[in-house]
Length: 495
Ligand code: GLU
Image (cartoon, rainbow, N blue to C red):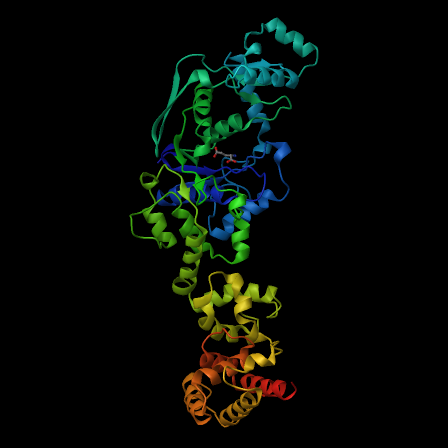
C-alpha cells in the first residue's frame, strides 16, 4: 500500500486558549475515522497567529487528548516522518512556496497599507457592498513593485483568485458545494512579517503531510473553495473534505461560554469520566441507529462512519451528558476502578492522605464505601460531599436534629442509650444482624422504626440523608459507630 492509500487525517488546533469541547469533538471524529480505517491520526499545532497564541495552550490541548485516550500517531512529543508538527517551525517552506506562486504569476505582492484597507472597507460598507479587497495591487507593473521594495515597503502576498467562474468541491457529509469565484476575494497568503496565514500554512501542510481526508467544523466551509484554488495554484491534489456539524446550545444558538462551560478541562475537573465524555461527544453529530446510546470505545471504532454523520447542528445537552456519566459510574466502571478515580477528589478535599491506591491506607475502606454511594453520584467531584462522614469523626450537627417528631430530648436520649446497650454485645457486625437488633428495639421502646432509625442516622452521619443505615453502620465498623452513638447521647445530655 502506498502512503496515498493509507488514511491520514489530522487535528490541527490553534493554541489560542483552552480546548473547546467543539474542537475536541472534531479531534474525536478524526481519531475514530483513523482507527476505523487503520490509518494515522496526526496532530499539528497551527501556531502562526502570533498575536493570539496563549502560553500553556498547547499543553492543555495535549492533556485533553491524553485524558480522553485520543493518542496521536504523529505530532508533538511523538514526532514522525512528516515533521516538524508545529507550523512555527515550518516558516521557510511557506515563504518559499508563496514566492514561487508570485514568480509564476499566480499570486502577487500587495503594498496596500492598513489605513487604505480600513478606508476601503468603510466605503464598501457605506455603499452596502460586501467587504473585500479591491485588487488595486493585482495590476502593479514589475517596475511599480520594484519601486515599492526600494522604498522599504513590506508587502503581503495575495492569491490571484479567478474573477469569473465557480469553484466546487464534494463534501462527504454534505455533497456538492459550489461558490462563485466573484465572492472570494484575493486572500492573503503571506503576511508582511513573513508569517503565513491560516490558509497558506494549512494547505501546504495538508499536502506535505499526505493528509487524505480533512474533517473539520462546518464554520470552515467558506475557507474550502479558497483552499481548492490554492491547491490548484500550487499544483497539488486536494484532499477529500468533510465538514462536521456545528455544536449548538439547547436554544439552538452556537454553543458558547454563556451556556456553561465549553472548556474540556472543566469537565475533567468536575469528574466526568473520559469514557462517558467520548461516548457522549461521539453522539454530537453521529448516530449508529435510532436506539443505541451506550458504546464502548472499540465499538465506536468499529461502527463510526462518515455516512452516518448528520449535517445539521448537534445540540449539546448537559443533562444528557450527566445522565451518561451517572450511567458509566453505575454500570460500566467497576467498583475498584471507580474508587481509584474517586481517590484524587477525596485527597483534594483533605479526607484521605495523598498517594496511589496501592499505598493509601484507607483504600480498602473506600472500596467498601463506594458501592453505597455510587447510585447517588453523577460526577466524581460529588464524592467528597457524599462520603465525608465516613472519614471525619468530628460531626457537626444540631443535637435537636436527633429528636424526631413526637419525641422529646429525654425520650431520644433514652433511645440512644438503649441502642448502645443493644449494639454493644453484637459481634456479628453485619447489615442483617444490625437490622435484626434495631428493628425489635424500636418496638420495645414504643417507637416507629423510622423514628429510631432517623435518630441513629443523624448520630452516625450527622445528616438526614445518607446511604442505607445498616450498610453504613457495617462499613463504618463497630468502634466508630458505637463512638458516634455515645457522642450523640452526650450531646443531648449537655444541651
Ligand atoms: N487551525 C484551525 C483551527 O483552529 C484548523 C482548521 C482546519 O482544520 O483546517 O480550527
